Length: 70
Image 1 (tube, rainbow, N blue to C red):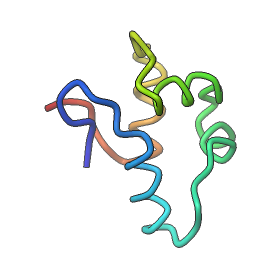
Image 2 (image 1 turned 45 degrees about the vertical axis):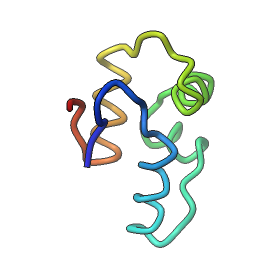
Image 3 (image 1 turned 90 degrees about the vertical axis):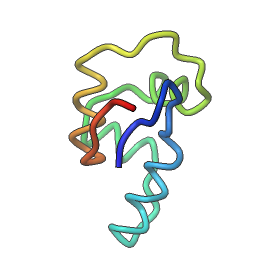
Image 4 (image 1 turned 90 degrees about the horizontal axis):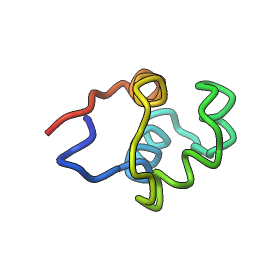
């Protein structure tokens, strides 16, 4: 599981993790677990983020157990 091509798959990753964990994953839960701001996640989910900082990327990849890349 990962971030394919240049698109951001945050909603897809949330759904996959939710099925795996047996619960609905929310931005608030990701915020608590990763410290990534809700506004940053919203921008990513709507593919409006021009850039993603390495710190944010690393924390989200750790949370979703994935890697960035093609």
